[in-house]
Amino acid sequence: MTDQSGGEVVEERLMSRARTIGSFGATTVLSGGISVLSIPLIVLLTNSHAWGSIALGQAVGSSVGVLAMFGWGITGPAGIAMMHRSAHAAAYWDSIVARGLLFLPALVITSVVTWLLVPTEQLASTVCAVAMAFGGLSGSWYAVGRKRPDRLFLLDTVPRVGGTIVGIAALWLGGSLVAFGLLQLAGSFIAFLLITRWALPGFRRPEGTVRGFRRTLTVIAEQRHGVAVAVAIASYYPIVLAIVAGFAPTYLPLYALIEKVLRFATMAMQPVFQFFQATVPTRRGRDLRRAIKNSLLVILALAVVCWLGFSILLPVASGLLTAGQVKVPLLVAINLGAYMAGVVIMNFMSSVALVAVSRVRSVGRGSLIGSVLGLAVVLLLAILGDGRDISWGFVATAVLILGYQFVVLAQALPRTVAEVDEGADPEVVH
Image (cartoon, rainbow, N blue to C red; front, side, top):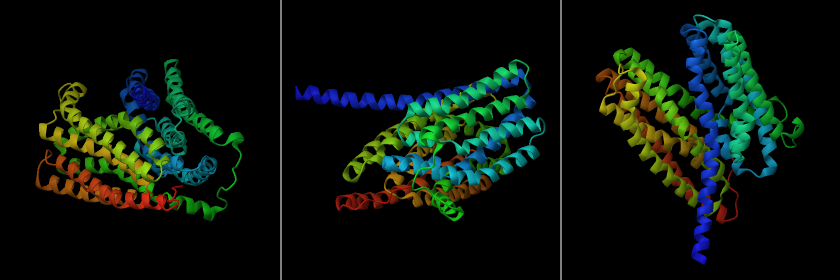
């Protein structure tokens, strides 16, 4: 009877976790699916040159949006999960004030850079870029930290995707690309309002929030480690492509294609990270150590599967996506599979494990040091070898970052457990 009851409890826990991960996955599937489907639809309804300009503007806006988010997307979910429920509203308000201050110059940068870069459809591309940059004010990280995939889906994902769908419908009915961009922007703005209305009932300012310009700058400074990770992630691959273009240009289509595949593969892993962001940091003491170890075992197993799957499927995917024009050498596939496995582990360490043990500073430091040294290896291999050898630089980057992260975790975890056992409350990340 006891064994049966225990088995039922374990089964219920597994089912609960699967439902949570599946709920987070609904956001990924819907967002990713619409993003992919919108490409041929916009090309069909306009032309390839117009789509190219729109895509370039969206890329600029997304990159600037990462800076405007300023690390809250990396450390924010775990930070919310670690806080007492009474502090959630104040933390969200502080993030809005701080990011709002950053968002204004981000809009100017986005608009100017897009207008100067795109060859055609400057106005439409700029509007689309602003719509993407508006993601910097997104409250999706708050819903993840609250372990509310339902709110993430209904309040954030649906309005954003809805804006894109309505925009495409407007194009089909004869509307302009400017209208498409404005509808995307409207979807992002509605998502922001809905999440904010949920986080701040009545849009009222909670007690205990920041006041004054100087205190706002302090809040921004506290997020510098999270934004360091975001910058390292956002800039690493573009710099690699620049190196490839300069020293091994014949391999540029290969690594450009791999960048797209890596991005979609990482997006597919997002629900798992979101689940751990919402659950692991809520533990304390020995429970936290057990949660980190158990979740790390899951991540390591997932990383091995990604390594094997990426190594096997990358050559197949490249043949299908390019009609056989771009071929992936076996060594490159294996090395990039190892890098993909490393990215899975790095994301867990950066956004879950190290935040849970209050080592946010190490998150930014490790990402920057590892990325810089890894890029140096990529450059050296590009100069001394050929395009295939560059793939070893990816492996070196992952090894450097992971080596640093595991050393920090091994040093921090026993101390964090001891602090809780002695009655001290470890530093909480805001």
